[in-house]
Length: 232
Image (spheres, one colour):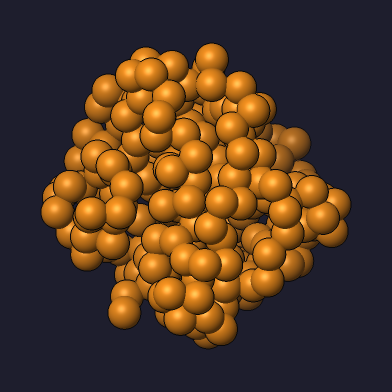
């Protein structure tokens, strides 16, 4: 991260703190201090993107070429605190910072090879109005900054608001999100290898529904990348 005198002055006037531990950040640190960043529970799935526990969720359900997440996610964990701040505490900057981190670490496994575009999972209009931004778009924005891949936001929309997936089992999650996405414009996705971006993957139900909405587009290939993966 390039730091200029203005950034240092702002940090002096209004110190930033680590999202996880609350310690003061140095001018070169973003969202997380070096210690918390080091201790994030990485999955390393980018090194086996077509055969890992996350990829297995999509087998026989929808044609996903590769799947990976940056970290393992558990409620009330450090990784969960990052997502909570991103989604519920008006911190879109955390999404961009985590997106940049995802891009840097996934590149070690050549995860973006042959990928043409990023497709963040859409939010329902009601949720977007409440939050003010789509956390998946913020993640995609950070990934795009590192990789140069374009972010496509107008091709797909979420048709309705559904109840939270948090307390639902696998079958209930699938039923809850069944047919909630609508393809608006297939043109930007034709012939492309598209990377679906979301914050958390638990059962894969939302990502499967998203893939089902676009899988019939001519020449499309679909892969998945999320910040967190919930181990069963």
